[in-house]
Structures are given as C-alpha cells and as structure tokens.
Image (cartoon, rainbow, N blue to C red):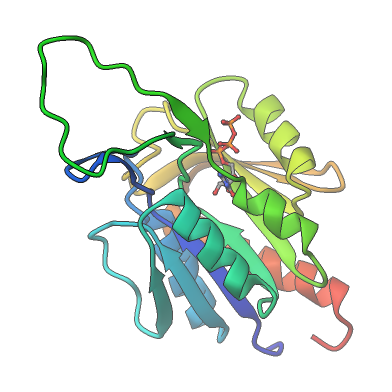
Length: 220
Ligand code: CTP
C-alpha cells in the first residue's frame, strides 16, 4: 500500500439562521461524504471530516469537526487545510446567508417577509489560493447543463477533479444511495460514471486522490 494520506472531507448541509428559531438550508444528508470517509479509512488514510448538521452516522476512525454555518465550515476547512494532502468537498454549502440575522424570534405581522441575503465565501476557492501540494476535489450539483456547469466550476475553483451530479435524475441525488455522475479532470479528461453507487463512487474518488497525490509528491 502507498503511504497514508491526510484526507480532509467536508459533508452535509449548512444552516444559515434568519433568527434564533429559523434557518435556510438544503436537503444534503452527508451520505456521499461519509462514503468518502469510509473508503479513505479502508485505504489506510488519516481522515478528518468537517460536518454540517446531519443524522447520518460517521464511519469509525474519522476525526469529526462539527459546524453549522457556511462561515464556520469555511473557517474549519481552512484551519485544517495546510496539514492535509487531499481535500474532498462533498458539502452542500449555502451560497447566501441572511445579511442581518435577528437576535430575537421575529413574530409574524401578517405581511410578506423580505430577506436580504449576502453571498458566503467560496471554500474551495479560498483553499485553491493556499494550495501547496494538496489535491483538490469538488462536486457539482446541477439541474441542467450538467457538464458545462461542472467544467466551469472545475476551472474557476482550480480543482484537480470534479464529480458532476445531476440532482434531478430519477432515483439519484440528495439522500439517495446513488448519483448520476460524471468525472471531469483538470487536464480536460472526462468520464461518464453512469448511475453510480455512492460507495463505489467514493472508492473511485479515493483511488484518484491517491493517484494524483502520488504524481505530485515523489515517494507517496
Ligand atoms: N463550495 C464551496 N464553497 C461554497 C459553495 C460551494 O467550497 N461557498 C463547493 C462545494 O462543496 C462543491 C463545489 O464547491 O464541491 C460546487 O458546489 P455547487 O453548489 O455545485 O456550486 P456553487 O459553487 O454553489 O456554484 P453555483 O451557485 O453556480 O451552482
């Protein structure tokens, strides 16, 4: 076996609070990230998981850093990034958060509620700006123009590999056991992975991470 890698994984949704009793989120369960963690542990790697709120069980042998918001996930991932060899961002990170969350519960007044949202920081882009030896792997959750959108994200976020995923495909997507997936690499290579089981997809991702890390650091 090759030398163990330090693998940093993010998983799950984030929550962006409007007031102390309400938040905006998404249907991510964290299953894909858990599968990546399990595959990485099985391959002998050292795994740290930055995990948004979810009830899905974490595989044994994984160090977990729990977070709630996109800002917390950003800070936790970047705090760990310098010490990792591979970052796999499976998390469904909120792109916007309420600009001025209320500190007290907002009572209804019978009128429509308008929220002003501000963008959150992009975690992969921040990691890419600090990259040394690290392999960067992302996911692209899409509902149309899947490959074109994923190729744009691969380029803009300076990734080595992106797994494109059609979240509207029947039996696939958030919470399901499978994903309708494609792999796109930095060098322009592309592979249709079909309706992929999350466990098999995770094994593929870990194998690719090992291959790319070995190509980067002689001796691994
Ligand atoms: N991601 C991230 N930081 C964010 C948002 C997303 O690092 N603030 C990561 C995700 O974990 C994923 C990849 O970027 O690995 C693509 O996420 P996705 O939600 O598909 O795309 P977005 O970057 O949000 O772009 P868009 O809004 O155009 O779909």
